Length: 320
Image (cartoon, rainbow, N blue to C red):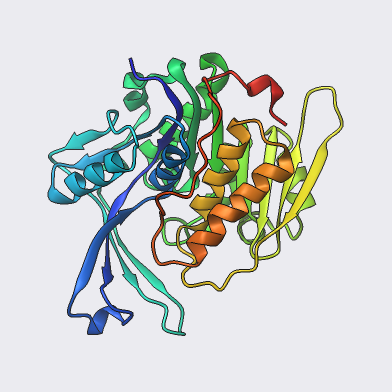
């Protein structure tokens, strides 16, 4: 029986990027890697010492093989991944930032991951899992993926796990008119919500972290990231007044912003799971993100500190 501290659910794609810092149109050599918001979080948490798994669908192709091999090498449990022989693994290309703004080109329509659905979770060890982590990206992939995301959130109370939900709005996947109300609905069902203030302004018209908190009264933890300025956490514990914690972001020379949000989420969750105080888990999120901002890769081996022993459900009453 698979026992996990955190199960991350979402799409991971092969990623192609020029071997040298040059535009794709000029590149003669490229590197092949992989990336996905939820699997990035799983890899960070696994390196930190948690039993992290990743559930998704991949095509029965070399891209899928490479993703599985890479995540397994990073300590992620991949036993819950389904291979689909009739749909491909998604691919995206990075066009480096040469002073004109970086571009990410996605080729994911009809991917194997977009076929995920609520029935998939029937094969997952949810009762032996402490936390589910997913994001708004998963909800945007297809109607069935959106239904799966809602299903996982709705089943949390009855099954016993907690859910962290990173809003992760991607305008290339859906319009604000569609994404705004749907992401607000899903976020309101989660235990932990992570959202950028810029996202909240685009989606919901919020200009301050306090306005985001007011809009999301249900989650126990609402974390609002204000880019390079700070992260703010609102903590709600039953029969106690709401608490607030602010921690400034690190000063970083940004090489590439891709993956920093996932790193922050992983650092924050690592601190939350081991029982750190709010300022400690926000600081850990900033530390994970700062390293990622200073590199062109999404994951660095060897940056974690192994946590004290954790069992699913063990610390939930004390969190906050």
